[in-house]
Image (cartoon, rainbow, N blue to C red; front, side, top):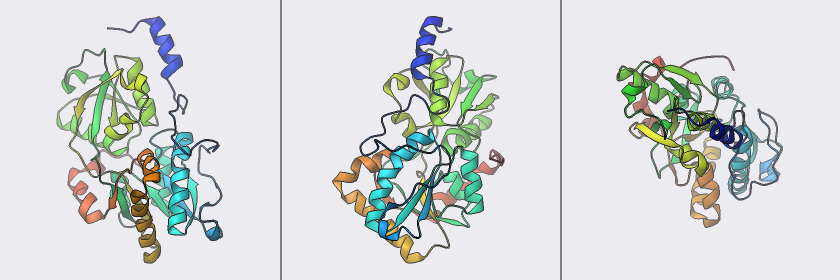
Length: 303
């Protein structure tokens, strides 16, 4: 069934947001921060007494960079105050740019997906991750789609944020390959763009993640239906370059736990997808990914 053209026109104006339009409410403390769309200096965030040697923090761009900046800056302000650290927030414009920065070791700290942690396990060590809910890849269709199983997606266009997005792309593609479902991948930069594309057209499907879908606008979520869900895995880690001083890394880890004990920081932690920070290590959380063969699905490309 094809959507009504007039209705689609209204939905297009309301929902479709390739490149970062249609953003969500960033939450408390985020107003008035004009965000960069690519890596750039943002001044000292946190403890100004440490402003001479800021540490860079990069965030994987699952959603438009403008929104990420607004979500992460107030959290890093509190984190830096508690850790006596000054931060410079970097928001790469695309996931490939973020990946290249990780491979080059350009970031002191980074919020990365589990595959990224696997990819840079020799140069970055996880500090904390969310312990509240596991990360699950979800395969979505429009609520009006006739598809009732993944087999119904044979030959269809399936949208993904990027080739190396962990749960939203790598896991979903690996599961479809194992199930023998041939499809046509289309990469649209962010999770938000996937959800909007599928919301607009019953002919499309898309890969997403339980955590980012929960944060979408209600008018988009109500037009989507989950067709398939992967098993759960430990969530995205907040990681540090392995060669940073041990005491500094420990101080920052303890600052995350201090925020978790502070009721005034609850909303800030939730909006950066770490509502319940717990200690993380590669051996305990991410070494198991080595057995999934995700490298066969991964794409190494220039930003």
